[in-house]
Length: 203
Length: 203
DNA sequence: ACCGTCAATTGACATTGTCAACTGTTACGT
DNA sequence: ACGTAACAGTTGACAATGTCAATTGACGGT
Image (cartoon, rainbow over all chains, first blue to last red; front, side, top):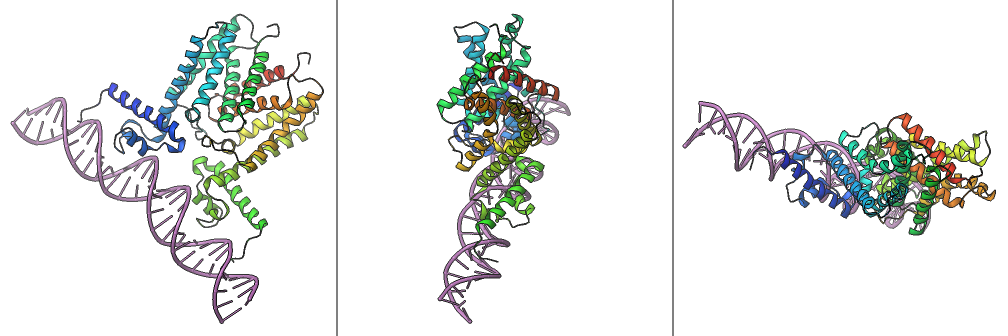
């Protein structure tokens, strides 16, 4: 067995390794993800991951991108399945799906936004995945803006929306927000405040 | 030299090690903080940190607490030095000092809120440091609430305030928010939205 | 003067990321 | 048909790191 791999084959094996890595991640936490354990879990030999990823950080980049894709799918599905079709309701549904994903997959969510060294730039592919994700909420915001009921352009609101939810999820996942009740309350309050701040006062 | 150390001595050496650790952290990033490098930087021998901390995670807990203390001092100082004494202005000043600290000390800030394993509870001392920190903004909020100009109780607003700022800082420190201009814009927008959502509409 | 206590150092080991050398197989030119 | 080059995949080796265990050495009370 040693012919040049087709691009499809390479993609397939990369995907397999990344999926395996995510499983390990969710089972054993960030520290539980080891290149050697990953190789074992994937049924390949110690050094095999190096054939498909430059180094560990390159693997983790791929994990981040795959995680973002799942996150995007989850929020998109929630919006599509929702009965409501007003954009405000769509935003609410998208936001809640986002939060739910963050809480249901704490380790993966943390990995997506994992601290990188300062001055280390995000890869183009990761940036694309981020943009795709943000478009889920950007679309209804754009529609709302065109109807003239938002106080500021959708791109700007989207940043605020994203940052707020991200902060809430992060604090919660670190156990810093307290019990479920407090968290639910804070989420509600955030929704109220965002809605009040988002919408022109007449709505 | 080998008599039982006084509690003061122990505290002093712990503080020295923690200060050294923070310096290493800010110089070399999270991965650059190694127990062995810390020992060398502190001029002690390899295993000495183990005399004052149970293990690395125990040391990092102390770093988190010390970092939170510095953060609290920075925001408190900003509020005290501020010319303005209206609570709304105090909140703005406190928030901006909080954000500035987060941006000026990205590695330390990240360490403060560093991912812990799921189900791992925060220590009592860390919780105290968190409470002290949150009291900086809780005080003016309480005053504002008693004047009847807030839409909800101060504890709840404080959570929203905290989560939003934290999310903004985190995203910025991971390079996910873009250039300085975009960040400044988002910070302004967040302030607008929070203020609009915080305050009863008549103010 | 002796001995226990305790701070502090050094030795040792498992884990991990990673490089380098090695093995074996496949395609292709002659 | 054969050898050779290219390439997938494996194993050996090493440095860095966290951490435990054994050792050393000083101080104070008896």
